[in-house]
Image 1 (cartoon, rainbow, N blue to C red):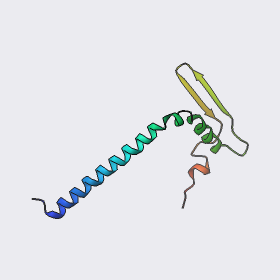
Image 2: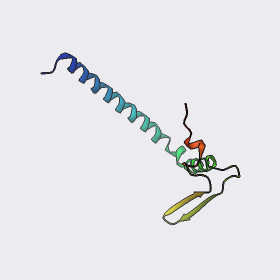
Image 3: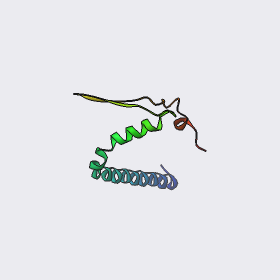
Image 4: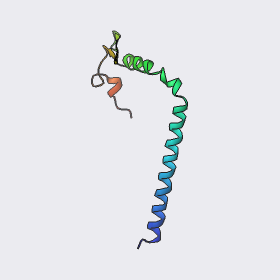
Length: 90
């Protein structure tokens, strides 16, 4: 038989899990309501990533559109080579 401390702890975990699930659901609903705003933002995010990966000489970006895909390429550094992306923050 569980003692009262175990029962209280179980109830606490259940409430925390429920509150967390509600918070995630609320946040996802808010994001879906703003889907139109985010729908066109992806290309800007890719360009920002390319700029962040640029060397001192700059970066070249190319887009190749096919009937079933879009290929985005850039001449910037990889995340392994880019100190902006691999440096540890203190």
